Amino acid sequence: MPIVPDGPAYGGDQDDDRGAARLSGPLFRDETFQAGELPAETQNPEPMSDVPQPPPAPAPQKKSAGRDLSAAIGVGVGLGVVIVASLFIVKAVFVGVIAIAVVVGLWELTSRLKERKEIRAPLVPLAVGGAAMVVAGYVRGAEGAWVAMALTALATLVWRMTERPEGYLKDVTAGVFAAFYVPFLATFVALMLAADDGPWRVLTFLLLTVVSDTGAYAVGWRFGKHKLAPRISPGKTREGLLGAVLFAMVAGALCTQFLIDDGAWWQGLLLGLAVAASATLGDLGESMIKRDLGIKDMGTLLPGHGGIMDRLDSLLPTAPVVWLLLVVFVGSA
Image (cartoon, rainbow, N blue to C red; front, side, top):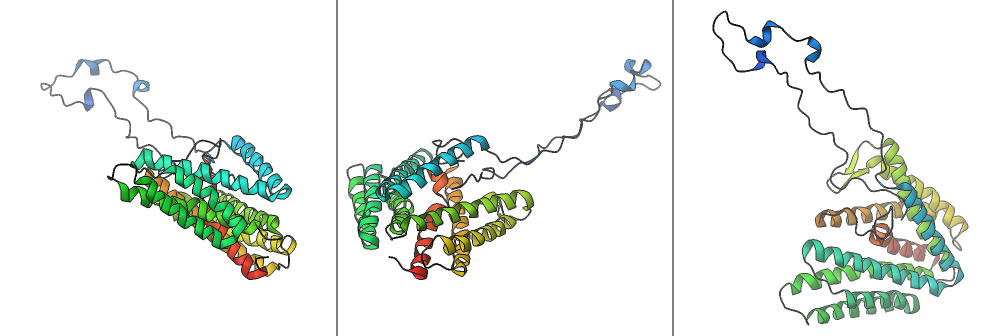
């Protein structure tokens, strides 16, 4: 995911409520005096300059990205180099990169569930099954991914039986959800990679997601006025969504025309539109999870970005969308 800083976790920048300055002195106290008698303070009144003045109006604040952009850019560039290098040198190396990202993402998700909700989804079967799911998808295709998903869910149910029965249902439910949300959706990246022009399909998928999120941030930061989903993510705007659609459709037309074998520009327009929608929904989906958990980020592994899951939020639900549309447009080979 690109360097697209998230909006504030609990509603954005707000001005502090401050009461007006109160005047003090004998004329503003609840005091009674005899007729003709004045309080001592009024016999030699102090200069008017001693009367408290209202505080100056605060200077207008500039829009802030909310994150350390220098760190975010550095980490983003570093990740991009690793991904592109592994993608075009040896496909198997990139499969390993996907598996590592899946395992770390599962660790972050299960750790936050345990800390914030006392939900103990078993990490060991999820991590082993998740990595196996990615490899099976690359080697055996969609059927292999489905079989690995089923076995991972079964292993999660059995593994949790070794502990006390209290909370069993919520723990295994969270485990099956985590298996589907992280490794199963990531497996579609491995399915794209397995095609003859797999590296270019994966690169198209990554570029469109990055461009969509960047367009949403750039347009929303500059022109955004109408909130898209204020209860979920106050920083997202309708104008930003339009920016995501526009940027992704242009990038999609270019990618399918020049990077995808037998691709056409009009297919890229549809692909970009679908990516903008799925990336936005994925981002909102993880924002909903984080709001339910009461956290800002899933982790702190990536300076300026948060955790691995904070970078996978829009990528995971977009992967099956891009895989399916590319299979429809140009086939799976």
